[in-house]
Every structure is written in structure tokens, then in C-alpha cells.
Amino acid sequence: MIDLKVLRENPDVVRHSQKVRGEDVSVVDQLIDADIKARTALSEFETLRAEQNALSKSVGAAKGDEKTALLENAKDLASRVKAADSKRSELEAQAREYLLRISNLIDLDAPVGGEEDFKVIEEIGKPRDFKSEGFEPKDHVELGKTLKAIDTERGAKVAGSRSYYLTGPGAMLEFALVNYAISSAVKAGFIPVIPPVLVNPAAMEGTGFLGQAAENVYHLEEDDVYLVGTSEVPLAAYHMDEIVENLPIRYAGYSSCFRREAGTYGKDTRGIIRVHQFDKVEMFSFINPEEAKAEHLRLLEWEKDFLKAMEVPFRVIDVASGDLGSSAIRKFDCEAWIPTQGAYREVTSTSNCTEFQARRLNIRYRDENGTKPVATLNGTLVAVPRMIVAILENHQNKDGSVNVPKALRPFLGVDTLVSSL
RNA sequence: GGAGGGCUCGCAUAGCGGCCGAGUGCACCGGUCUUGAAAACCGGCAAACGAAAGUUUCGUGGGUUCAAAUCCCACGCCCUCCGCCA
Image 1 (cartoon, protein in one colour):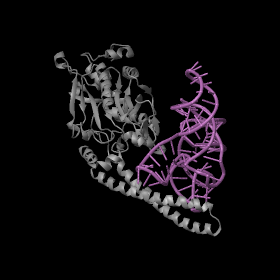
Image 2 (cartoon, rainbow, N blue to C red):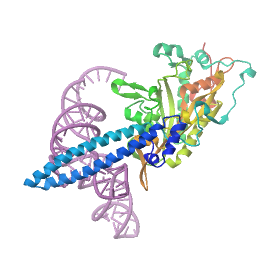
Image 3 (cartoon, rainbow, N blue to C red):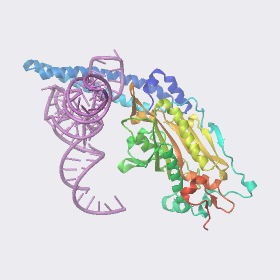
Image 4 (cartoon, helix red, strand yellow):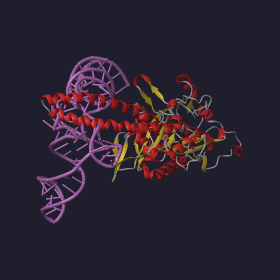
């Protein structure tokens, strides 16, 4: 949630943010109004309550007739307190509802616009010229099949669309990617974490995934728990309701991720670009808000290092305001070149959520002036299926074999993946 | 799934209707003493809103009462034992 002080003192900042995100602006004024009403009700309640507390104390001390008279008074007051209290909680709930509908205040450096209005920051590596090499690149589905690495047909048979098996070299590739990712993260000072992927509503709500993203979240009705779409959720909630010390704290979470992919019918139906379940190594930082911007760039740097090590051509984009999640003020995506699509596709992403999540999750740090919400940031180190796609397609040879990036060789044990058909 | 026990300020515990936002010990911070340290002693030490007064918070939500950490109800979580199972 945003800082109410900003809203009270500078509502135009909030209006502008909502506007460039393409979100409801009118909720800002509804919140301002609700906030004033709630605060008025609160102070009315507090005044009455103070009176009641004082009166109550005198009842305890009084005797006889005096006591009877006081009790009469107190009874009346008690009912007024009760009424004031329920009015207060009603208005506070209303205000909170509006508050939760407002997204984090956009970074003014983020490009304004929709999905298409991203800004390319840099391009790293050059796409291969398969034509001059004398062959048509195969797509990852085909390569995965001949290498016996990816089995989407049986995935569909057993689990439905957007499901797959990683087998043999495919499975080994996942282990290699994850091991390489975790060992680089540990070198960079991250604490490796294997978090729960089944979380309660507070964790889900706190990280902001039950707003606009709710339709993509799996919910297990019977037990009222959610399957996380990213380990960002359990990592952020790890310090829920705590006052943390020794910032920055950096975690590298490895977990399965679950996504309903609602509203994506017909999009990326082939292969494992868009799937319901995949594994991912995610970086997550808790940090002093003043350092959030610098940390964002550091996370991006780690993502770039990983992609460079995969020897895959990619570009970095500055995602436009209308395409950001509600918690993020700015987001950088790394997009790998996918030869058979002739396009760059998102493989990793890093977001600066400033204090937005920490406010909801009640995660604070202490400084000379008291306690304040921390900033949280997240970034993908590796999302396994998409990285496998990028590696297979970019490093394929004419005979259908695939060269393994040097960085992965120690973890995989081979230099080349060879067709076993 | 069955039977019990428990949830109080970082940790451990006291409190069982008004004198309790709450005692004690440990931890922590500051000081005295000491060549230095330990010990001892003295002082401080939960959080939120608020300019302040004040209000709120003893797992959560509801109820009884003039008044609830304390009584009642529901839920959640944790622990122990039994059953089942990876």
C-alpha cells in the first residue's frame, strides 16, 4: 500500500501515477474522502472512550448511592461508545478498501504508456545468422523431442495444456541451471532458500497478488491456501510482522511457480514458453529505501551476468508504466532472442517495489528516528523453461545437437546434447 | 481423523474482573566501580495513530460487564500422545 501521508499532502502525485498506469483515478478522491471520514470517526470514538475510561475508574472507587448514579451514567456512555466504535471500524474498513486499490507510485523515470511503449536500454550479443550457416533453426519443441529432453505431448495427456515433462537431458539441464544460479547467488552474498509454495491469504495479499493479478493465482478453496506464482511471495512474507536488522538482507529462493494463465488462450500454446508450472530461482532484497534504486540496478546486473554466461543474445527493456505490476514502481525485463520466433522474449525481470509490500506485510527496520517500512525488490535469476528454450534454440547445430554454454558444463558434465533418436 | 495441553512486551515466565499496558528473570543499551574486563549496583528498554491530551494492541474475531489479559462462544496456530501415511 502507498503512504497515506503522500496522499494527504500530495494527492496529485497519486492521481498521476494511477493515470499513467491506466488505472482508476477516481479512487484517489474516494480514498481522500473516506480517509477524512474515518479519521473524524476515530477521534470521536477516542474522545468518548477516554470519557468512559475515566468514568469507569470512578465507579470502582465509589460506594452506595453515588455508585448507583455513576452506573446509570456509565451505562448510557457505554452504548454511545459502542456505536461510535462500530461507526469507526466501518469507515476505516471502507478507507482501507480504497487504499488497497491504489498501486505503488510510479517512478517518473519509467516510460509512460502500454505494453508496446517499453524503452530498449541495451542489446547484448548478436542473434546468429542461421541462413549464412546454411540451415533453418528448429524450434525448442522439435529439438526437445529429438533430444528426448522435453515431452509436451505426455504433459498434456497427464496434466492438460501448458504442461510438460522435462526428461533426461532436459531434467539435467534444469539441475545444472539451478545449481549454477544458486552458486552464483551465494557468491554474491545471497542466502539460498527453499520456501513453501503453498501460502496463506495474508502472504498472498501482502505481496499484492490478489489485486489485478488475482485471476492468475491458483486458490485451494477447501484449505484457503494459494499456490504461489513466484517465490517472491514466500520470500517477502518471510519477515512479515517483523522489525528486521542488518539490512540489506538478500535471499535466493528456488521454488516451483504456478500460474493459471487466464486470458492467454491461443498465446504461446506451443512449447514451454508459457506453462502452468515451472521452477525458478528468484532474488529478493530487503533494503533501506534510500538504496532501493541502486539495488534495482544491482539485481539487473546479476540477471545480465547470468544471461551472458548462458551466451544467449538478449536485450534489456525498461517496462512502460501501464505494464507494471501493482507493487512495482519500475521494472526491467531481460529478453532473450528466440531464433524461431525472430523476436526477443522475456526470460527474467526485476522490480523495485519500494516500501509498498513492506507496508502491507508490516516489515520495518529501525533507525535513529524510529521504525520505518523497508524497501523490497525482486529479480529473476533463472526461470527454467524459458531459459531452456533460449539455450536450445540459440545453441543448436545443424544436426540437431545443442552446445552447452561453458558455464553450465561443470554442472552438466557434457559439452553437447546429442539426439538420441 | 481421535484425546489432551498451550498461545502475555526479543526469549522465559507471573497475572485469573477495577490498583495491569501489564510484574519478575534473561538478553540488550547507558552509567557507577575497575589499569582493563567480569561481577555488583543504578537507570533505560514493545508497537501503532497523534502536535499533544489521549486512544489502541495480552493468538484472531465476537459476546457478557459501567469495567476483560482475566468470564463465555467461535476460529486459527503450536505442542504431546494414538491412528493413518510420505
